[in-house]
Length: 72
Image (cartoon, rainbow, N blue to C red):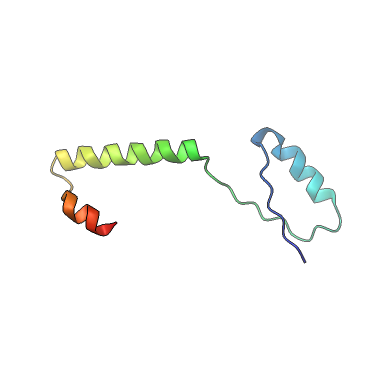
């Protein structure tokens, strides 16, 4: 048995799924939702800004640059 990964535009997804479900030899359809890279970057920036604000308000302890570089 073979497995295929397809990247379908959001606007075409419902039509594609309808067609795929109608094909008799397809045994299983797994749907994996992915966050677009732009959305992920914006979410990460928002989280980083919130952490910086918490550190400035002394509600979260920051780490020094040397420890940060050692983690990398």
